[in-house]
Image (tube, rainbow, N blue to C red; front, side, top):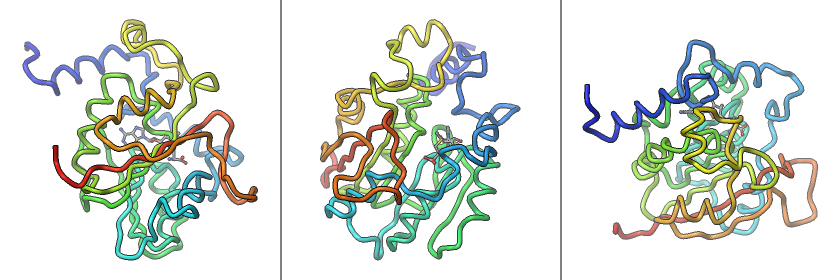
Length: 242
Ligand SMILES: C[S@@+](CC[C@H](N)C(=O)[O-])C[C@H]1O[C@@H](n2cnc3c(N)ncnc32)[C@H](O)[C@@H]1O
């Protein structure tokens, strides 16, 4: 077989990461069970990301009434459920069957749906969405799969919709190797570090609204999830198609 399509190229590049360090595709063993089954793991929480709360308070995220939100790589669903509590019809999707099972058992709110699925390789039902959010999924992608991610975003985000993302911050956590090095070595060191400029470049078809460390700006701590090694950015898709 000779490569003749982008999907064939992406599938071929996936095989470079044969050492199990790519946690963004289905393997025989789900690497996320190890993380989510730890009672005291920081991600095993009900707290929403600090930036979500801050954006909402600042009016950058609209109230949820009659709007739909999608949480890509939702894990145990803490941010999905926060969207539901703000009145959104909220959908969380995740590759890990374990995470989705756990998320479903924790969902006491109305207006929340959890789906098992691969956001890079499968069509996501129920959209397009007014708000698409990703906390901690994108930074685990091998470099070439950003292409798949952007294609997904294109189909799930409404024109005029908002896209929020939280990733490892450059200099704090994640690999700082360039993309070619990562592809050549066929190994991901638990995630990739991004500068704010990297995020603006990758999502350059969207309008940048704001970005910064994962923290609330007002006097408020203890009720939100914040880590010094994470940062977040908010973008808006233009109304008119290019
Ligand atoms: C670091 S965890 C973050 C979980 C959650 N967003 C949170 O912040 O609590 C990354 C999540 O991305 C999910 N993920 C990775 N690749 C994915 C893919 N291709 N499709 C859907 N989910 C994926 C993993 O299963 C995992 O739950």
